[in-house]
Amino acid sequence: MQKPAIAHVILVAIAGLIVLGAALAHWENHDPQLYASYVAMALVASVLKVKLPGLTGTVSGGFVFVLAAIASLSWHETVVLAGASALVQCLWKPKKRPTVVQAVFNVCCLSLSAWLSYFGAHLVVQDTSGKSILLLLLVSVVLLFTINTLLVSLVVSLMEGKGLPGVWRLCHFWSFPYYLIGAVVAGVVSLAGSTAGWLLALILLPLLYLIHVYYRAYVERFG
Image (cartoon, rainbow, N blue to C red; front, side, top):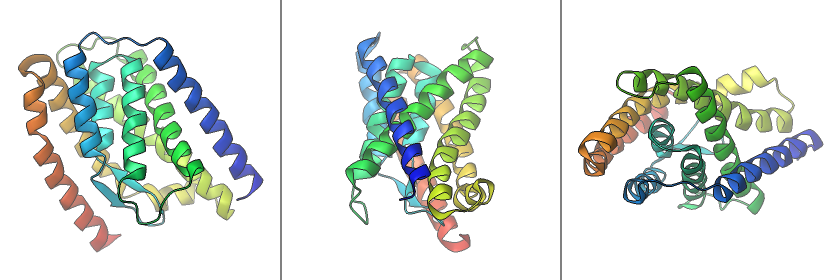
């Protein structure tokens, strides 16, 4: 691995560990049952992985519940959920067993992206009630997609000596529609969690699986 790539991985790992540590040190949880259901669904969704063209890594459905957490939970809960989701995605039946460095980078990358997306979205949309949740999710999905994919693409760019814009388009062109569809599901999950209880959100997992199957087939055919 090239020195600039190593430096990038180290910086992301340090920043991500600081964010995770702060989330645990200042932990807030006002509804343990709701949070437990979010985490459980995020972990299940994280095993629904799709291999993207040009990358050894994958994209999973776990981001849907990261978005739902941004809309419904505290930043502490969101960051921890994101880290747990990334860890399961990384370790669950990989085609090639990841190294410790790769696992740490993936966890820290999504945790850091979730943290930045949370505060960025809530800075833009301060009212999180009613229709404002839809706007919050729209801002959240754009931020989460942009930050997370750029952090990953930068590693590939530095390792292969290629331009970042080209690598980013090649590696993540296919994943943006998946993120947008996931944001719609996250909106339903957020509304269900606050009005009809977490059981309705759990029922959406089969829908998320169907979306995953369709998206995987789409990427395999046109990727």
